Image (cartoon, rainbow, N blue to C red; front, side):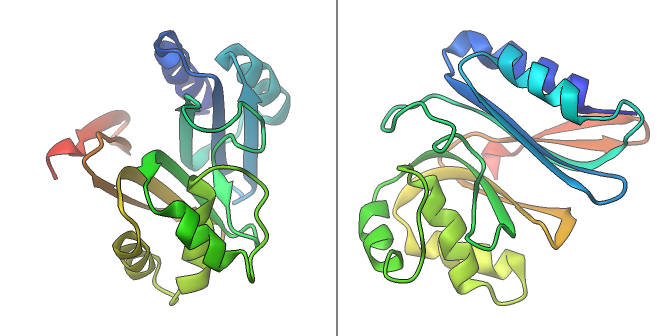
Length: 189
């Protein structure tokens, strides 16, 4: 069934924590990619998503996020997910990259940036270091940054694969198994 209403409900449940933007990224059963972003209330996102999603669609993979702007302005450009210049890699990130400015200064020589966030640096680095193996690429990127983090990455060319990594930040991954969602709190990993 269409999992997007459930996803929006989960995001709505987090809204009390003071988030200022939300987004969803999903892939339907024909591998079509959808991305919606909204600032302030999750209800703003919900109204946009209802216009785009077909209730008959089955979504193969999705990631979502609510953002609380601690360092950068509340704008659609700063709202996650952030993506590479080719629009191939989509990244959600929680926490702060402490050395992002130095990395960004190096990458700006060949990459164009559209936001003020540190998360965009991750997407640009993934594209820069991509070695045809997303997992090993993510490992290389993680080694370059000083941070505590939880990230999830989807490659538009292989949208059925979700790569995630974490260090010092909690993360929950939900999987659909035999007709039910299974929650994996991977904070202990």
